[in-house]
Image (cartoon, rainbow, N blue to C red; front, top):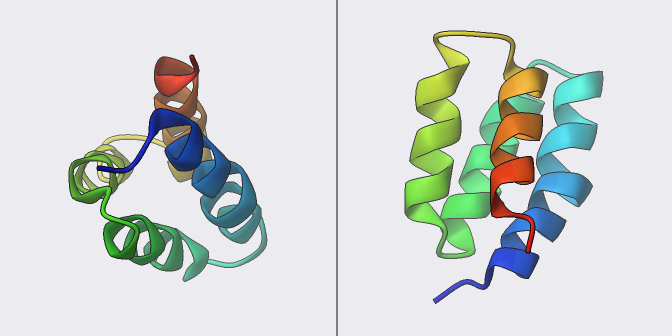
Length: 67
């Protein structure tokens, strides 16, 4: 199982940086999370994307998993 610290690191190093610089970064971040075994988190980020700003959603999810 993927640790919460690993997921937070992935959000920092992949999703947030790519979302800020390119539209496809969002999908790349979700795919990276899924490949790392964080399927539920990737699905939640994708689900939140339809409701609000992508970057804001990632920061909210990241803050919820900080240990």
